[in-house]
Amino acid sequence: MNKMKDFEKKAKAYALKNAIHYNGKANPGAVISGLFAEGLKREEVKEYSKKINEIVNSVNSLSLDEQKKEYEKLQDIISEREVREGLEELPDVPKNGVVMRFRPAPSGPMHVGHIIACMISSLYVKKYGGKFYIIVDDTDPETTRAEAYKNIKRDCDWAFGNITEYINSSDRMKLYYDYIEKMINKNVAYVCTCSSEKFKGFSELKENCPCRNNDLKENNYRWNKMLDKKNGYKPGEAVIRFKSNLGMQDPNPAMRDFPLARINEHEHPKQKKKYRVWPLMNLVVSVDDIEFGMTHIIRGKDHMDNAKRQKMIFDVFKKKFPWVYFMGRVKFNDLILSKRKLNSLIDSGEFTGDDDERLPTIASLRKRGYKPEAFAKFAEQRGLTEVDKVIDSKEFFKIIDSFNK
RNA sequence: GCCCCGAUAGUUCAGAGGCCAAGAAUGCGGCCCUUUCACGGCCGUGACCCGAGUUCGAAUCUCGGUCGGGGCGCCA
Image (cartoon, rainbow, N blue to C red; front, side):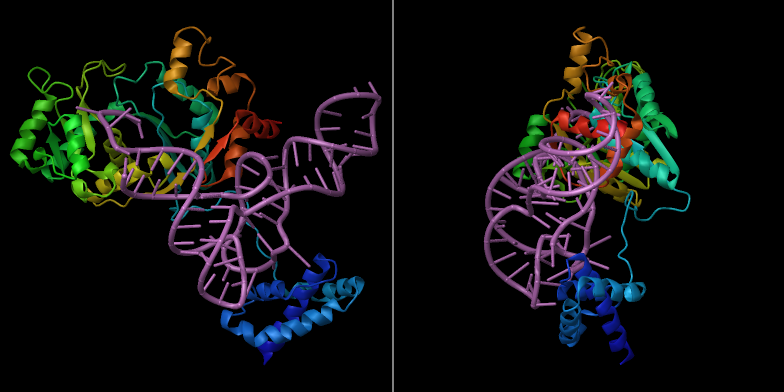
């Protein structure tokens, strides 16, 4: 019976609180929900509801002043609802902090889209401590631009200010080759010599390509032929494919034996002509995340399928896949964010450089007097969200401007 | 065609079955402050995509629909 009395007292307090808030008229529903915070059980609601109605009625018959006086006496016995603020907590944070990364492609200037996507990771590393790597994804010799390395460093230093280390993927080729060889020897990867059109045909029919059944010996022979600069396969004649979990029968066409590496003989701005077999994104990312011990990854929703592919690779090496969050995409109606477009406008001289004030690049934002803290505030306010947004730059910069003050 | 995700004021977010009768910021309107502008202060405005279901109770859970975004590259 003690419990009953206790709840009655608390019910009165909640009723008073609710009545004061709504001009003297309390609502029984609000009282019930308040009592849940005090340990009321679902199944007990019916038992108490009559009593609660009586209490609410008696409270409602009081004048507002009387309610306020009564509430002063009782307000200490009920708990305040806790409000969450700041960044949402991440799960499974190790004692010594998180390990996170951002992987810019060195194929053009960094712009406002990158700072929006990456700022949240930077903030979490600041919150928990740990490591924050910038890994320059330069394993496509065809699109990698020489000036990007120093520009990425300049822009990331300015924007985030807490970079642990800058890494270039192309300096780690030996590692990627090792993993390819391990995967071939584990029989989870094979060399496919079908043309991309032919493979696409198999994929649409959910049929295996003939290369999938080759034995270890054949795959090793073909792998060496891929590496052979003199007498090897030509570009486009062979790729390494991953034997995905459900193989070519996977209901999701994106999962069917995706490629891990290909031949490309373009001169690389940093590695020059040293390599002809270049690993593809899903291999590079998986190897790096395993080797650096990445704990948490926040990336765009457009990488959802890639993350599934990467998890398959983690599983091959029996590694625990990091916690991953997929952020909704912010799409600007009226901004030039295509790297190809930005490059051509700058290269042609139509714009003075990557810091031309008409451009939405990070270099330009810095020059125009924006502070990185304004973007940090925006990212913090946005938090973790899977919601996509289409927005006019005018609206976006209104918000940034207000933070920039 | 197949796979995945989302939907709250004009905009960006809050929201974890009941203290939501939906909160904040920004915008917009008004007033105050100020010689003017800016800044600041006060008041106001304004939203749960649609339809079923579960429940004593749904913005929240389930299912359909609609709309929006993304993926199915030898790019990342």
